[in-house]
Length: 97
Image (spheres, rainbow, N blue to C red):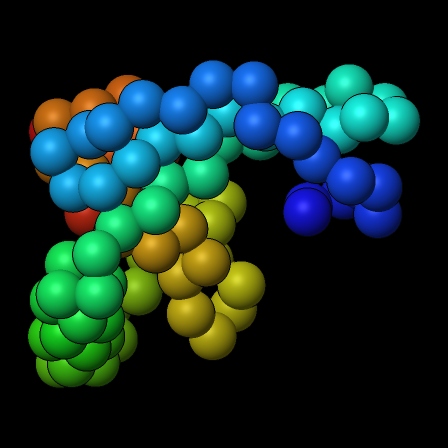
């Protein structure tokens, strides 16, 4: 799956409001990962929302590119859009209070 080329087995599976959450473990190195399976409708909506966010980000003035932010690659932000009011959002200059 991610860093390991070996086979993963599902060790836990549970329904969520948007689909199914699965915990998987590598048979070889025992690395664990979580996957989220969603419906095609949910996936299409998420893609459309991402396209809207990308368009909005393109409209931001250049001074909001967070030149001093650790997540800025020099040409763009590699942090993506953090969820509002979470610990992750505190690492984004646009979301910190």
